[in-house]
Length: 392
Image (cartoon, rainbow, N blue to C red; front, side, top):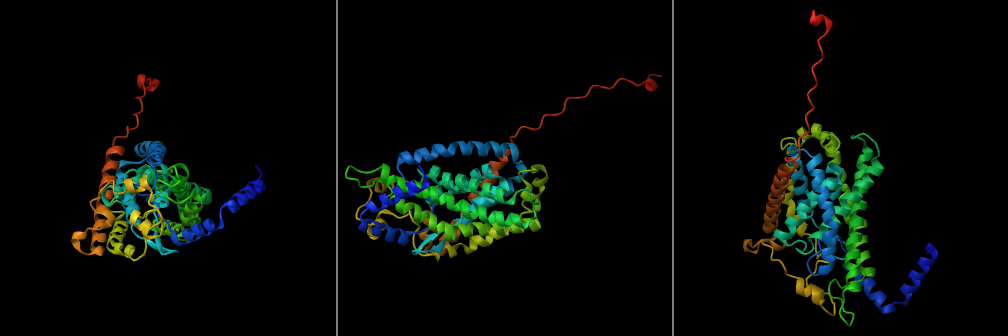
């Protein structure tokens, strides 16, 4: 279908929607716009969650193979650092239009340093720890969250980075611009996927009377609400974080940026000692973590059924209400009420999460990469025949 006819049909379909409905959803989208991608249980149907889990499985398999084949076990401290960085950076919520919040992911930086295949494993580790221990993202939706943030984001970011950076030397400023664009647009594309997943739910899964069973907002609301804040706020933050760390590595530890191309040469640059400054930075971020509490509001697509009712939704989706609370995380919401202080609970959660993610990523890398088959030894060369001089 020609583009002009497609736009004409789209316009005609839009105008067939009652004006009151268009105004309602338009205002709702503007009010609720945010940049979250941690999809909790209940917002996607079990069938959707299963499909997305199956979609991400091949990427996990490829990532594990790449980690085993290309990454030296001596690089485990770097893997641990990047996984912990992804965990911590997601705790820093930023205010967005509409009084809600969003955050960066760090997936672009991980993909540029380790390659998108291994980045899928690294970011997935952080997401799994978040879901199990902190209730950030649903247990059923680990596959969905990993697909959006650990597959789409790293692969898109890396492709854009390679396209823009080309064959420029490691120290080239062009690589910093490429890192910014990769992080910015990679996060935006990942948000678009999340918006589509949300928006398809009321179309595919609804009661006999048309009432949505899971995420209640259609594509016309969900996609703009996810894409626009990422494009304008969260995406640029992801890009800036990526470019800043790349600039630091260009000056102080350039070998790390050559890990995927020259792993044996780069391995000595990935020890704990050589990465000390970045570990100290992570420790500072742990202490500063309560800054993430200053951003008001709740991320779009992460409301409880009670919050949906308080916001004016005239019904509570039955499937959403039934699946909420499926898993009781020990530090739900990055808080420990027994402490009596939300900031202290947030710092404790950040410290626990950093240690968990860092240690498990380090151990996993040591075990997996350490099993890589050693390079086959060259067959012994046959002894050369004695020369005439030796024979004499």
